[in-house]
Image 1: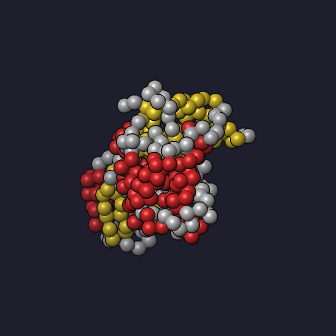
Image 2: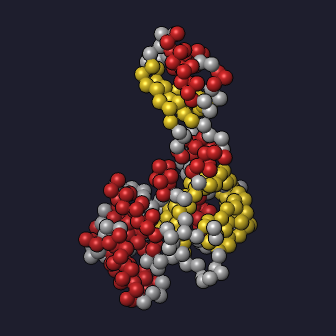
Length: 304
């Protein structure tokens, strides 16, 4: 696939802190690129460098402008709108800032307001909109000039389920015309939307690829989760054949096992529980989700 943007050995430091540490990757035309990481991982700094808002200390950002100049749109994490302008006034004003013809601004603006569920409030002042409406208006402002690539930084933050669904479906409709770089803390949303996913932490690139490739290439295994009745979870671990358990974790009353052979592990669990008169409240096998992989790569410690 042809790339539209290439990050080449990007580095950015703030004093003694290296926010972005030698990151390199390509973003392909027409894809939704999930750019994930915990708080403080370096996502926003990288996006600022990719969008031209911040100069890297070393490395460079390359744009594929072989056919035409690349236009960029940005929807920041924090809502940026003019409180005393109506929705339609903001759309028209933003279009003028991009030197778009008035007819084109009006046509595209009406399309965006309709697609993002804002037609009924197009004459309402922005400060009188709900938080979800303001968020959707922010997305519209980033797309008024039909950019070649748009950076959506937490575009679904604070949205109710209906609004999240609307935004998700709209992002899918534009991806072939506009390349989308999406940051989000909602792992399920990222997995549903993204063609490829990049996970960074502490300024370093941890992995990149489709969700399936990330799972396969990093050797992640299936999960077996059990709940034992009473406070016997830790004791129960002594009864299990350790050769079948490369890794496990305990959270509240639940034990989660990683296993390359979940069927054999389940058989071992049931046998051990029966022999030691322990009652299993629940037992399930499942594939690792993107959230499981994310936690496995970045750790469980809280980030501020």
